[in-house]
Length: 281
Image (cartoon, rainbow, N blue to C red):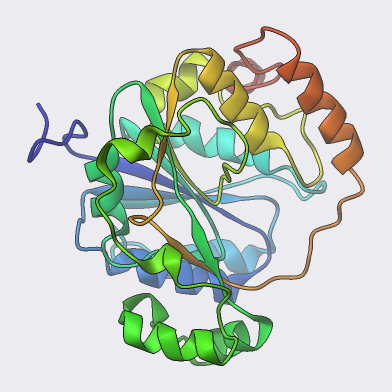
């Protein structure tokens, strides 16, 4: 039964990807600990971090949502698709939100994603980019910027601390949230939500994507092909994206080729997805 008219009745699973950035992960977990809606669990999807990440997660257990778990695999390069799949296999919620380990969720993040959840749809959220200087300031002092009012962000925008303010505004939009319902472009897994059974139907992320880029686009193309429509989470779910160095993009040409092949085919299920991990186990 839906709660307050929302189709997600209880537990939501949040999958947080991380790799060797403990200060950012601590800030992400702190922000999640301050959510107004407590009915969620967090699975930290660790793409091969040093042992300190697991120790950090342990210190936050009992303080973040209903459950906090850590799943890790060996560091063999950028394998975000595979570690997200491993986290999904541990998830208990009927609805899954993917969040990067350098994206801070404002206090109503879970509540707004819950309100936007709709059967037959996935929700593509957006972000505000913090500058390098602003990020260093936030992490050095572990400043709870996710709680800042818009007036403080206006000051940060005027001094170049963030790239825009619009993503922090809240607007109802209504039917306009579906105006890009068939469009895969621009969807990012740093803030992306969907029903777990839809994710399982397309077999999750394709772990053949190794190295940065396009694994999220591949997933979205297959979701759309399976009949799941896009719903915009803009002006509702915006997150604060901490600055980081650009990832090595050496694998991007191969990943572009792989994505183009998927776009030109009729595949719905991943070549090496959730079912492949289950078979390996």
